[in-house]
Image (cartoon, rainbow, N blue to C red):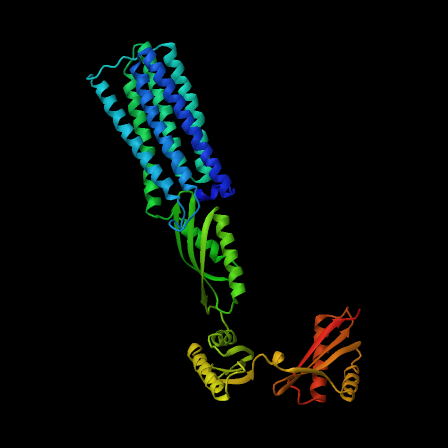
Length: 470
C-alpha cells in the first residue's frame, strides 16, 4: 500500500492544528534539553555534555524550522500558490537532513581525531552527567515517537525530519553515556567508536530523507502509485479504459491528474456523475488527494445505431434523433441505416435538407460499413408548439367503445388529440388488473395502439399509458 494511504482522514483545519501542536511541543523539548545540558555541562566541566548541548542546539534549530514550515504549509491555496504551500515541508525536510549530515561529518572528524590520539577530551563520569544524559534519552524517545507518529498520520516530511533529529540525539546521548561508562571502567575508546557507528546510522537515514524530499520537489511520482490508480479507475463501471495518470506530491498532499475514456453517448449529467465516482475511488486509494478527472469520449463497443446517435449530436440544428434502425445485408455484410431527425423549427426546408445531407455524409465517414442512409425530417419541439384538444364526442364514444372491447382493459380515461405541426398524436390512459405480468400489459397496450391507428389512419403517433386498477 502506498504510504499516503495510511493517513487518517481528518478535516484540513484539525490536521493543521495537530501538526502545529506537535511542532510546538518539539520546540519546547528542544529548549528544555539544550538548557539542561548546557547548565550541567558548565557545572561539571564535562566537554562531552557541552558537546551534547551543542547537538541539542542544532535539534532546537531544526525544531524551529519545522514549526514555521508546518505553519506555512498548512495555509490554503491562494492566487499565487494554486497548488497550496505543501512544498515548504519538502524544503524544510531537505534543509534539516543536510544539517544532520553536517553534524555527522563533525562527529566523524571528532571521533577519528580521538582514535588517532591527536585529541584528548576529559569526560567526567559524575552523577549529574549520567542524570542529564538519561533525562535526554527519555525526552528524546517521547518526542521522536510522537513526531514519527504525526509524520505517518499526516504525511509530513517536516515532522519526519524533526523526528530524525531527535532520534539521532538518542543515539548520540547513548554514545556519551558509553563514553562515561568507558571512562569509569578504564575504556575511553568506547566513546569515539560508538560515535562512528551512530554517525553512520544517522547519515544513512539523512540521505534517504534527502532523496525523498528532492524527489517530491522535482514532482517524482511515488513508485507504483500511477499503475495502482489506473487499475482502480479501469474497474469503475462506465469507464471504457483508463488513460495516462500523473501524480505529484507537495508536503502531505497528493495531486492526481488522469484521463479516462467513456462512451460518447453519455449526457453531461451522466459524465459528471461518472467523474464523481472515479474521484471517490481514487480518494479511497489515496486519502486527502486532490483529483482532476478528464473524460474523453470514445466509440468503443458501440453499435451502428449508437454511432448514428453520437454523430447526430455534433450538428447544430438537429435537436434529437429517434426511430434509428440498422439492417445488415447478409451477402455484402454492409448496413442500411434509417433514422428520424428532429430539426430546429426556424430552419427553412432548403437549410434542413442541406443539414440532412451533411449528416448522411458524416455517418458514412464515421461508419465505413454503411451502404445507404435514409433520413426523415421532423420539426423539433412539436408538443410545445402544437395544440391539444378533446376528440369530438362522436369520435370519443366510438373509439372508447372500440378500445373497451378488449376484456383486459378495465377502464379508459384522458383520451386526447395533440396537433403536432402537420401530424397528430393520440394519448390515452387505460386501467388494467394489477396482478398482470409486464408481458401481458405490453401486449394490451399494443392492441390498443393498433385499434387507434385502424380507427384514425391519419394519426402519426399513439401513446398508451397503462395504470393498475385502484
